[in-house]
Length: 116
Image 1 (cartoon, rainbow, N blue to C red):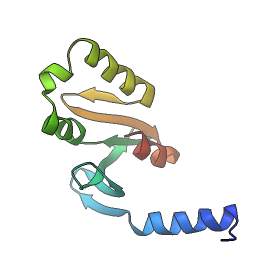
Image 2 (cartoon, rainbow, N blue to C red):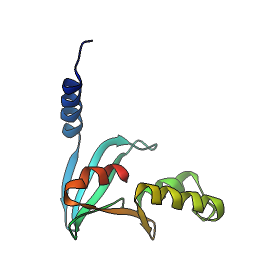
Image 3 (cartoon, rainbow, N blue to C red):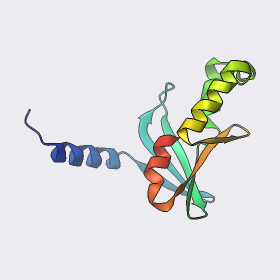
Image 4 (tube, rainbow, N blue to C red):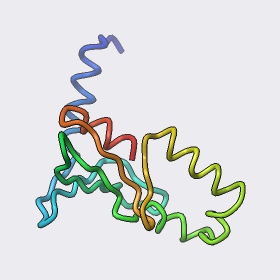
Protein backbone atom coordinates (compact mmCIF):
# COMPACT_ATOMS: atom_id res chain seq x y z
CA UNK A 1 0.00 0.00 0.00
CA UNK A 2 1.41 3.36 -1.02
CA UNK A 3 -0.46 6.19 0.67
CA UNK A 4 0.47 9.62 1.89
CA UNK A 5 -0.41 11.21 5.19
CA UNK A 6 -2.73 13.66 3.38
CA UNK A 7 -4.53 10.85 1.55
CA UNK A 8 -4.99 8.93 4.80
CA UNK A 9 -6.26 12.06 6.57
CA UNK A 10 -8.77 12.74 3.79
CA UNK A 11 -9.96 9.13 3.87
CA UNK A 12 -10.37 9.17 7.66
CA UNK A 13 -12.19 12.51 7.63
CA UNK A 14 -14.55 11.42 4.85
CA UNK A 15 -15.35 8.10 6.54
CA UNK A 16 -15.69 9.53 10.03
CA UNK A 17 -17.88 12.45 8.96
CA UNK A 18 -20.12 10.16 6.91
CA UNK A 19 -20.85 8.12 10.04
CA UNK A 20 -21.58 11.05 12.37
CA UNK A 21 -25.31 11.69 12.88
CA UNK A 22 -26.61 15.04 14.15
CA UNK A 23 -30.21 15.36 15.31
CA UNK A 24 -31.86 18.60 16.36
CA UNK A 25 -33.53 18.43 19.79
CA UNK A 26 -35.54 20.96 21.76
CA UNK A 27 -32.60 21.61 24.08
CA UNK A 28 -29.78 21.46 21.52
CA UNK A 29 -28.41 18.68 19.35
CA UNK A 30 -27.60 15.01 19.76
CA UNK A 31 -24.41 13.93 18.00
CA UNK A 32 -24.02 10.18 17.49
CA UNK A 33 -20.37 9.29 16.98
CA UNK A 34 -19.11 6.20 15.13
CA UNK A 35 -17.57 4.87 18.33
CA UNK A 36 -19.26 1.94 20.04
CA UNK A 37 -19.42 1.38 23.77
CA UNK A 38 -19.06 -2.07 25.33
CA UNK A 39 -22.82 -2.53 25.00
CA UNK A 40 -22.58 -2.02 21.23
CA UNK A 41 -24.41 1.30 21.22
CA UNK A 42 -22.80 4.28 19.54
CA UNK A 43 -21.67 7.01 21.86
CA UNK A 44 -23.91 10.06 21.78
CA UNK A 45 -22.96 13.52 22.94
CA UNK A 46 -25.56 16.19 23.63
CA UNK A 47 -24.54 19.69 22.62
CA UNK A 48 -26.18 22.95 23.59
CA UNK A 49 -25.08 26.57 23.31
CA UNK A 50 -23.06 27.94 26.22
CA UNK A 51 -21.44 31.31 26.83
CA UNK A 52 -18.80 31.65 24.14
CA UNK A 53 -19.19 28.11 22.84
CA UNK A 54 -20.78 24.78 23.59
CA UNK A 55 -21.78 22.61 26.51
CA UNK A 56 -21.05 18.98 25.65
CA UNK A 57 -22.82 16.42 27.86
CA UNK A 58 -23.38 12.69 28.09
CA UNK A 59 -26.78 13.25 29.81
CA UNK A 60 -25.78 10.60 32.36
CA UNK A 61 -25.03 7.81 29.87
CA UNK A 62 -21.48 7.11 31.09
CA UNK A 63 -22.45 6.39 34.68
CA UNK A 64 -25.50 4.48 33.49
CA UNK A 65 -23.23 2.21 31.43
CA UNK A 66 -20.86 1.81 34.37
CA UNK A 67 -23.82 0.78 36.53
CA UNK A 68 -24.48 -2.24 34.27
CA UNK A 69 -21.41 -3.99 35.70
CA UNK A 70 -20.62 -2.01 38.85
CA UNK A 71 -22.26 -0.90 42.05
CA UNK A 72 -21.99 2.87 41.69
CA UNK A 73 -22.26 3.34 45.45
CA UNK A 74 -18.97 1.43 45.79
CA UNK A 75 -17.44 2.86 42.63
CA UNK A 76 -17.93 6.44 43.75
CA UNK A 77 -16.47 6.14 47.24
CA UNK A 78 -12.98 5.99 48.66
CA UNK A 79 -9.99 5.41 46.41
CA UNK A 80 -12.15 4.68 43.37
CA UNK A 81 -13.93 7.98 43.76
CA UNK A 82 -10.59 9.78 43.97
CA UNK A 83 -9.47 8.01 40.78
CA UNK A 84 -12.77 8.87 39.06
CA UNK A 85 -12.40 12.54 40.02
CA UNK A 86 -8.77 12.55 38.83
CA UNK A 87 -9.82 11.17 35.44
CA UNK A 88 -12.54 13.82 35.16
CA UNK A 89 -10.13 16.59 36.09
CA UNK A 90 -7.44 15.40 33.66
CA UNK A 91 -10.04 15.17 30.89
CA UNK A 92 -11.44 18.63 31.58
CA UNK A 93 -14.82 17.15 32.52
CA UNK A 94 -17.17 17.94 35.36
CA UNK A 95 -19.90 15.82 36.93
CA UNK A 96 -23.31 16.95 38.13
CA UNK A 97 -25.80 14.38 39.45
CA UNK A 98 -24.42 11.65 37.16
CA UNK A 99 -24.08 13.83 34.08
CA UNK A 100 -20.57 14.29 32.70
CA UNK A 101 -20.02 17.51 30.77
CA UNK A 102 -17.57 20.09 29.60
CA UNK A 103 -17.87 23.57 28.17
CA UNK A 104 -15.69 24.42 25.20
CA UNK A 105 -15.06 27.40 22.96
CA UNK A 106 -17.06 27.56 19.74
CA UNK A 107 -14.06 26.44 17.69
CA UNK A 108 -13.21 23.53 20.03
CA UNK A 109 -16.36 21.42 19.68
CA UNK A 110 -14.50 18.44 18.22
CA UNK A 111 -12.13 18.36 21.19
CA UNK A 112 -15.09 18.56 23.54
CA UNK A 113 -16.73 15.59 21.83
CA UNK A 114 -13.60 13.47 22.22
CA UNK A 115 -13.02 14.57 25.82
CA UNK A 116 -16.43 13.19 26.72
